[in-house]
Amino acid sequence: MRLIALTTAILIAITAHPQSYHELIAEGTKKMELGDTETAIKSYNKAIALEPDNKKNEFIYANLALAYEKCNNEEKAEEMYDKALSFNPKSPRLLQQRGNMFLRTDKWDKALADYDSIIVNEPFNEEALYFRAYIYSEKKKYEKAYEDYYRILTVNPENHKTRFALALLLHKHKKSEEALLILDVLIEKNPDNPEYYLTCSDIAKSQKREELALVYIEEGLSKCNKKRALYTEKARLLITANRKDEARSILNQLIKEGGNSYEINSLYNKTTH
Image 1: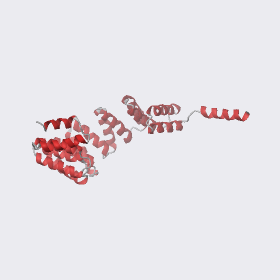
Image 2 (image 1 turned 45 degrees about the horizontal axis):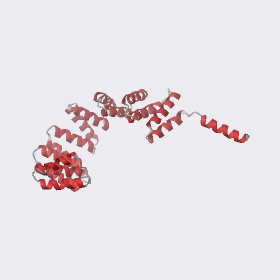
Image 3 (image 1 turned 90 degrees about the vertical axis):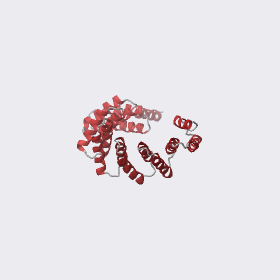
Image 4 (image 1 turned 180 degrees about the vertical axis):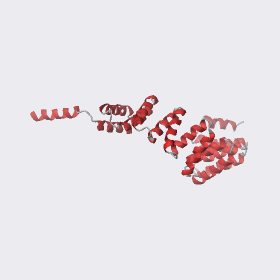
């Protein structure tokens, strides 16, 4: 009986033992990985309460910010980013994460300030330059957008995402031939990207060159694995060229494959009139 009582006392003591700072951090991180953000937030906050002045709290606050973002609580996420940055105000990782959150929530001026802070210390930070260029473009500060895109390509000519964004900006400014040249290079290096062919087709259509637009779509269909958007665009071009029977055949196939949608139905109706 004494042995049983002693074992029970030990178990109670173990169960009652409070979690340490590091145990709470480990628990919070594990819960984050499992998608249990509410429990993660509780664990992280308990850890901070135990050691409020620990320098490692920078990383806890950063994780809390991500957790609050997942809970769609941008106000609390911003508060956590601010606290994390109080430990390391020039951290490019934290500034990038907070800037990206501001960008997603259309707080462009705040996002721009964070990207500017990064670029002051890292003039060729590709991610910060890319998103800053996007904001400049949306704010119609086109020359600044061009400058950022070209700065990225100066240090990394193989940055395809930036080349594509530059092509779109050139097309927007009626510099269609320059845009097509960039896209032709992108297609050569990455022929399985349907978005490149669709953009080329859009540019050709803007130039009233429907036959060239169809050539780009046909090329995409011959090289890409994902073809749905390309077939939809081909049907649209065939309708414009009054080749409605061919367009209807394509649309019927898309519908059979489960592609029935408002867009498909709208195009199909045009083939019957």
